[in-house]
Image 1: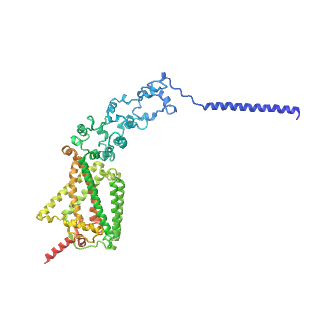
Image 2: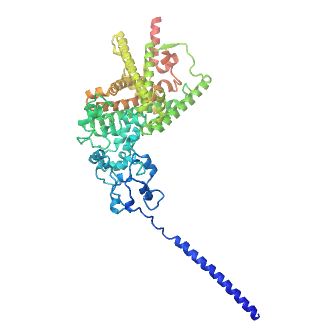
Image 3: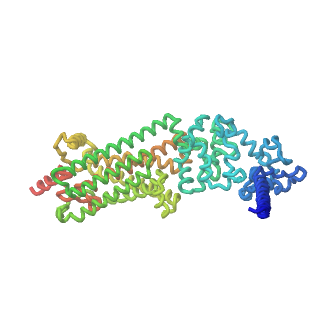
Length: 599
């Protein structure tokens, strides 16, 4: 390479090095600037204390809006919907008078009592202001009046009556929390089971009492406190308000209608009454359903099929099994599942009807018979029809209230005027039941007089033969006997069914009268009378419904030998074949009387 060429090459190289060096230096400078931009942001400049205007909340929002990340944000939308929307920040945050805020300013929390002095005084004297054994045990203003966001204050009057009751129960149903202070958490379920609780929570009645109506709002005190609204000395004033029960005295007020479960737990007499009816109802249902189940087993699996046919009898058995399962779920408190089981049972029973009517001509069941024997005259048949209508009215309007937790049972009420309409219809049914029962008693006395007041003419009275027939039938059910009792005019099942009404109707009528006029009787009877009436009426109604569905309807209609229905309640007569099967002794006596007449 010549010298001139070498010189030219070196000059060009220096230019390239200089160019690359300048470029690298530029990149380095730009990178440093960029890295410097990624460093900590300078804190927003707090508003100087001399710039804070107590009448201008916008100054506070310069730091506390949701656009600032380093300060507590205020939900201005929630605030705009609250009753405090027209207040200034310093109306509540009175200690905040400079920025930046000192620790002392932040530690001084807003006080509701500044504006709500009366409510604050009442609260601090109430049970709700006691010291916590566990953090958050007792409610503060925020616990009841704050809806999520601290600035979303809600007035209690903005809540529905049902929501107000649920607000109280949200804490009082917690067993652990209530247990720390000796408060019975069953008070919530006790209220839910009461008429007031069901009316408000299940049927939307706005007149029925809620927790705050009786216990107060801010001045809640235990009943033992003389100043408590629910103290015995103040009970008559509480319940006799014009909007509640005018004329009620302290006896009615302390009757426990709103908290029956608590009354039963605390009162030995009520506990015994409740236990008696529970055992009676449960025991009778087990006894009756057991008898029906054994009768079905015998007839379904007998060598000779029953008159309805074996398949309808089997479907009847399955339907009955579904009803038993439904009762079991109801006893466990699973009322909705029980309702579905009952519905399924009726579907299966309907299938049995369909098969019966499709095959009855082929099987020759229920063939016509020209000879009829009178069992019930027109008066008895009318009494039965009226009693049946009363029963349907009372059950249709009473069960939805008894089992108010089943929404499915509420739907028919919509067609009869809801809760108020159902109460009117229930009372009409009750009044008619009293009339027909009285009619029947007078009719019996008249017929008995015609028979010379002979005890033997009272054919519905149990006797020793009924006791023997019961044991013979029981042995046959379990395979220890092949003997079949021969029945006279009425067999022991019919007598049990009939006498159950004479046991049940007086209880239902007497307890129903107390509940129909609770103030009148509550003011005159012992303090526990209304509670006893509630227990007796509810359980006896449950027993009556179960007995009619599971026992009476089976024996008279769904029994495979009578299926699909005995027509005696309509015609008053039985055929010779039916008399030979059900009442052979009476038939023998009738035939014997005819022979004597012929001779």
